[in-house]
Length: 395
Ligand SMILES: Cc1ncc(COP(=O)(O)O)c(C=O)c1O
Image (tube, rainbow, N blue to C red; front, side, top):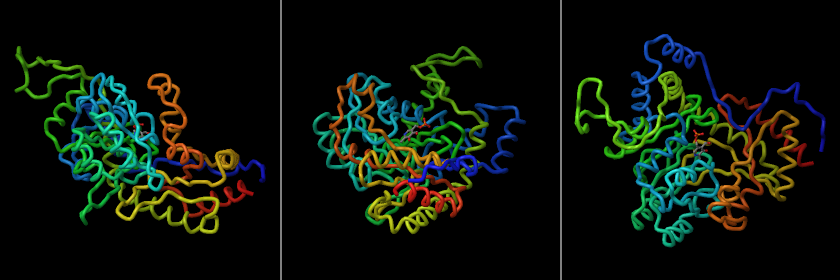
């Protein structure tokens, strides 16, 4: 393996990166020059565009995907002692939302072909724990098996919160009909994230989508301190200044500044996804002769992935994967492991007794996975550069 350090001469390539252009900057500056920086009209406009795009009735925008998960779990009624089930291969936030509400996070192992929650494993865990919620994660941008998950959830009386943090712009089909991720046609709610590495960005930000009006009203209240939103819900009304906090909520509000960026980004979402998909094709071509060493996590026939991540799986065990990651860093190429299984986290082991060995498919996947650079502003030649560096690392 060559060890020369080209860091200074090569631009950094990270596994994900935002695209910001002059239109985005103009949109943000316009809000900065206006009267309302937050709680103005742009938040509702962004919500409308999000809901329309996903094909859901309602969207509630908040200050992060994590906040979205928290209020979604609360709106689903998760309380102390309740169980919620998610995938062990996800960011910790998908499981933490259950714990925030006093519930117990449980996991169903992944399907190794899709790295999404395995429906048979899910059914078994549901039978054992009778969960209040199921949080399937659309891992790397590919929707989970939502129609099947919805059927399992109905059987066990659970609500489904689709974690669509990776999948804005993705779709799946069922019985020949195509559904958008976060449309909530096979879930009660879906959450989105607008962190800069995601499909679009608002800096930090997130949203919950739903088709249920009661849930929508609850989400609005939880976002803003638990203060009742509509006049007709007030217990009393002493005048124009009057407001009532009727439940315990939070300040999870997003600003108009952020939503102006979000609106501008939404205009480019489809082209972002198309460029990601083009780059994946180029990766496949350039890596074709390395198929014994590296394979990519690709989409299933009935799914269209938004490719938030391009996950490469390296054969030869975790030491080899580590060598590749370390070498790529010397070349200014910043890959990442998505994800350390949540049940490996010390807090999960201390509080819920999880151990290594609990979810073998997740653990096996973890040992070889590496997310390679994939973002719309990448050039075709950047893929070439990653391939050259990986070939060097594997020598
Ligand atoms: C699957 C998944 N869910 C939820 C989140 C939380 O989103 P945020 O970072 O916007 O809080 C993330 C963020 O990385 C994620 O990857």
